[in-house]
Image 1 (spheres, protein in one colour):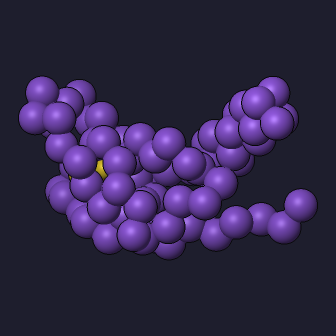
Image 2: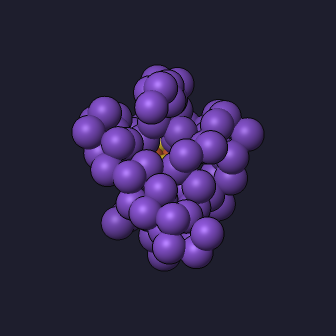
Length: 77
Ligand code: SF4
């Protein structure tokens, strides 16, 4: 399977960006920010947003999310 690249330096590549579709997430994706300090505000951010609590997601975490999503797709398909 071809690796899917996520852009660096914004919500899309932050560990707190709770995308529901990790296989297709892109800069235009909108998702909840689940950072423990921001969670209470129930923020919905886009992949292009950014804040100073940004923490870069590791490639293996992206792959894990994508594998889980693939398994879900296989179950429902
Ligand atoms: S708002 Fe900040 S903490 Fe939340 S996903 Fe974006 S960069 Fe990460």
